[in-house]
Length: 383
Image (cartoon, one colour):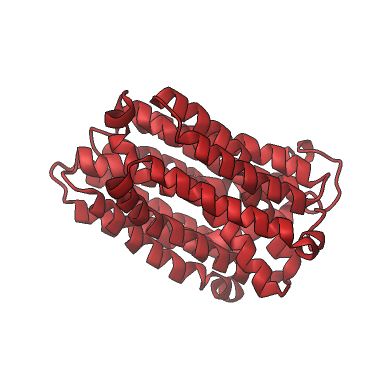
């Protein structure tokens, strides 16, 4: 199988895992009407998936350093499919939240293995470019999945999005299962028995990993809260959230595919810092918008563009830098980066859940704080 075909398979695996959140997003405000409970409890449905994914990342990161990645990827996709179908049997928000935690736990495999597979397929500069392309493909999910999710919600109810992810994940799992030669090509991550401890003592890795995680986490804190904030406090509709997503993602795709050229011209440290600062600027603008009464929802579309541009600039180079700093422990390193993203997102979502029906200010303030820490961590270091 050609590198391009393998890349497509790898990208599709991460996309279907991301769809587990983005397809469900439009249904979050209406879940209390279907299953009982409150808006705050419905936000926990998102946080549980993120938290489960975070723990799953550690499990897959450790397993990837000891066992074949191909088999683990098949297991991840097929169990993700099974838990997606299981979610449709939930009778209340408590059950759905518990199932979502399990769903996130088993679905984490593609997120861990995709960067390592791409890193193995290409040389350094090409790997940065392809990581940018992967990010672009993945970013289509937050742009298009809410549109599809909203249509499924209105036509078939909230359970339909879970059926869809179950079918797609299952098909991908069987494709990987049938592609024995491809699985053999990525049968083993670099063998390392060092564990996670050396990474937690590795200063360059921690700075790279946490700055990456906090930048993406700041964006996701805003995105996860946006459907409820837009409909409950800004007087908008779900289509306003979709416009915000599509607009932001278009700019993210543009910058993610330009990132490797910026690295060639300015170096990775300056590129990463500039992108992080741009994301922080967008978050601060959103917080200021939330502090101003009667702010039009269109301002949210505009300011979210800066949040996405910043992530597009720094995302590919930032992830590659973290993998490089992890040296021969890249399986666990990849897992820790994404774990930090998911835990930041889960904790942030829980923290703002009591305020999502009150406006954007608290959401923007927390996202700004997280993004500013990322700016501090990404400051260029003197050599």
